[in-house]
Every structure is written in structure tokens, then in C-alpha cells.
Length: 81
Image 1: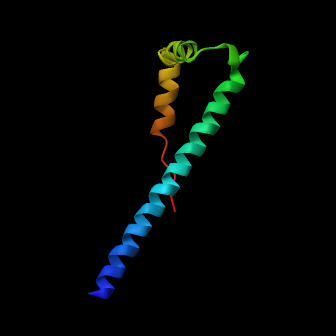
Image 2: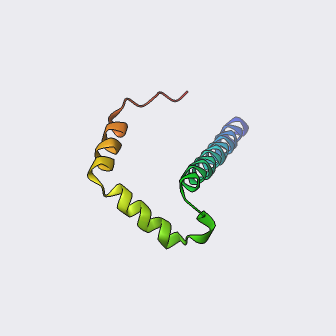
């Protein structure tokens, strides 16, 4: 029974660790991509969130943008270790 309890606790700890890593990866991705976006904006501190959303909607509703996005998503995904 002790071994079972230890195994269950170990599994819970590993699941928690995985969630933490996933959260850190997501945070890193969001910060990196947000920085990429800001590098294309003139005076980003003067734009509101609504301004940026308007720009993104206009850009991503363009046919050429949609076609490129589709091609990028159709690429073979790299395997994760």
C-alpha cells in the first residue's frame, strides 16, 4: 500500500511539473510573439489594444495572408522530444 501511495504521489508531482513546464513554454511563446508584433508597430505605446486588434483583423482577413497561413499550417510538424 505504501508503494501504491508513493507511486500515486509521484505521478501527481510529475503532472504538476508538466503543467508548470507547459505554462512556462506558453508564457515564453506569448512574450516572444508579442515582441515580434511590437517590432512592426510604429510607436506601439501609443496604440490601444483595440487599435492592434483592428490591425490584426485587417491583416488576417486578407486573401494572401490566409493562403500563406494555410501553407504554413500544412507543413509537416516537427516531432517533439
